[in-house]
Length: 313
Ligand SMILES: NC(=O)c1ccc[n+]([C@@H]2O[C@H](COP(=O)([O-])OP(=O)(O)OC[C@H]3O[C@@H](n4cnc5c(N)ncnc54)[C@H](O)[C@@H]3O)[C@@H](O)[C@H]2O)c1
Ligand SMILES: O=C(O)C(=O)C[C@]1(C(=O)O)C=C[C@@H](O)C=C1
Image 1 (cartoon, helix red, strand yellow):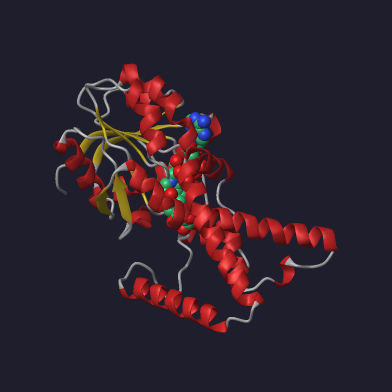
Image 2 (cartoon, rainbow, N blue to C red; image 1 turned 60 degrees about the horizontal axis):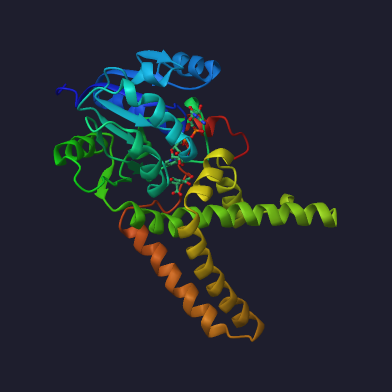
């Protein structure tokens, strides 16, 4: 086994992403010690029962003491409070990172509180499922997925290199990007799709209610795929939309214009417009499969453990 990349890793928050990192660290022997922190005793006990760490605490400052790598794995809206709480306890030279789905806001929330003696390298593994909590994680989550790092200008390249090596060892492909660019790209590829899923499931549920008819019962493939996305964690996604407001509103504006154009095409029987778009989007999907970024029949990213808990799926 090669030398671990970090001596002590502190995971602040131990839900889907924190626990998946813990599994990946164990799988690759990437650290000598994993310190696990979370707010609630019950969650901590669950993490303990799953053997995710080597030490457990509800105190974030205690968890980061002596850590060479600190990763915040909490909802985006919780980052500022945690940065404040851990700042005095951080080890000089430590790499401090996060996994938040939004980056500009995380930089704004955390950077002012962190001491100059640490290296702040925000990150986002672009991999997940609709499940949450410590039992939802699995070591393979990041395999062959992107992990985007958004280091502020002037960050020590060695620290960026060490965090890149960590994510590569977790199975991911690393890309460096400006936080604003990250937020714009993820708004259209991840955030707006989630909003659409929440909305369409909400609309169908409302229709069922007001018409007192069975709408959900007859849902087939397409709608069921939306219900999977719409089952994603409410706290996490509330925070994503509140913290990536501008980019999401910009992309929603474009989306709405394009949707209106399709509405017009249907109204006026313009089959060519519909056919041309559907041909283009089919080619995009096939290109993604050929590039090996997706399987033809996805299992929706669920862990074997999570799948076992879902009878009837
Ligand atoms: N779920 C995904 O698909 C996915 C993918 C990539 C990145 N992310 C990002 O990862 C982060 C964690 O998401 P997750 O899916 O692991 O969530 P999760 O709900 O499974 O776990 C969240 C953890 O944070 C803790 N927590 C919640 N609120 C807190 C607060 N106010 N203060 C301190 N701790 C708090 C919880 O106790 C839990 O340990 C989020 O920022 C999310 O945007 C999620
Ligand atoms: O596959 C899923 O369930 C996801 O929603 C994962 C997904 C995504 O939109 O691709 C969700 C949010 C994250 O920030 C990164 C990944």
